[in-house]
Length: 267
Image (cartoon, rainbow, N blue to C red; front, side):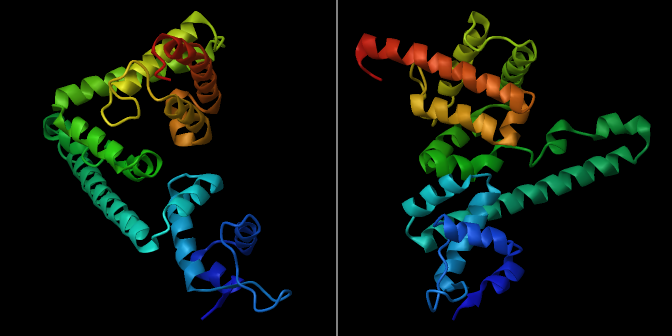
């Protein structure tokens, strides 16, 4: 059975123009009954399109999506992985909804009792790091996520708050330095880059964890992602701030990794 491009567009909400582009770049090849015939899509193409849309919702670009699809040829297994992540996201959203509903209910009570009734642990139930599980798994493997997740869950609530505070302070210092038009190659910017690298290797499961420096490709890949993904850019004051972070980390990599290589040949 085959579906027309118009039928696929109606089913998915993806425009015909986008589908044609996916075909042109080889991401979602269409089937033609003749060389000049209209684009048609078979069942295999529909399954591939479903995977494309799932990966696109994660914020991956077309190049990264193509790499993931090429690496994961077992479509059923790949979709099972997606399904598990979607169910986890469904659970997280349900917890968020319940959390906000509790907060609204408490806020509508007698103001004299509101402060006591709103508990921080309840207010932020569902607002956690697991929202990035699929992205971490796709980019760096399931083991990376499992190790970092186990480490995070092993921290006490106080330790988690202290950790979040340190990360927030680092983000603010980056944003302040960017706003001040600091030179990415300056001592100030490079001190921030060193703090950033130290933060990355302190998280179990990350490439290069517990080493003097994170994996060079991991560091530079993150630096590019900060600019490409607006969710991460927001941590540094927006795209301009994220660009400053990326440029400073690139300078850091140029300076730090050759020095390590000269010392022990590890990089």
